[in-house]
Picture 1 (cartoon, rainbow, N blue to C red):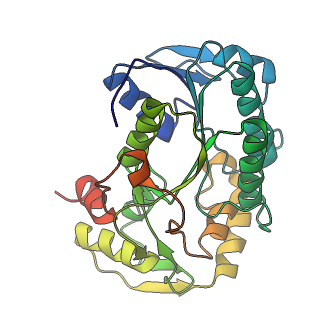
Picture 2 (picture 1 turned 180 degrees about the horizontal axis):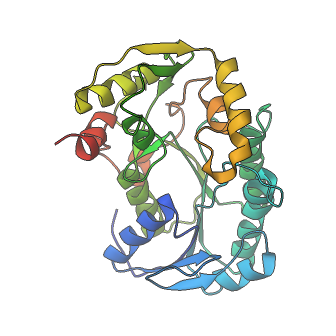
Length: 297
């Protein structure tokens, strides 16, 4: 896709795991990228915004050509619910973008998002997609599979298992299939979508070059680390109980209800929906490549 003219892009959650990479990619290609966050970052252009506060959101998107919403919540707290962020907050961003005449709105979601899910997290993600499309007809909703890269919550967790742990627990029997997508590829896809600037929306599912079972992901990491530990199936009911207990730790929870819910079914991009190739990524990385780069020699 051609770079085209410089775009003024506001990235909500611009200091987070994905948001930082999106801003870096935009800046590298000559665009003006502004982080819209509650706290001032150490570097870069910034606007104060809280997606639960419509007035601050409207002020943040003023003058933007494109808006990207990367804000996510994985553990609820007494003052903040999944609905606050993924439904009401996403709607605030979409409505403000429409009112400001923004041409391109990109809403980050995830494969498996479903309004009818019994999981509060997964349901909120799905209802958030609906709220965004209702508020901004041509919104682009991007659903990645598990994102892997430096500072992620998946590859880092597998690589960081304590050496003293005698065995590695699997989600169920470890057969659930994943299509891990690299952080680099997702950020590039967002940059390409901003540059295309067609105003055409739609639903995209983003998956990497390889589809692996959870067991295979664990085995790949173990091989790169030179470790051989038994892999032990753990019923999903056991994971659900652990997630419930871990939820008491707040944002520091090592396992969340949403993760357990998503690991009950395959997390693979639909062949019937547009994906990375349609966003200019013709050479997606495989999980093995990313793991080798960050774990291997």
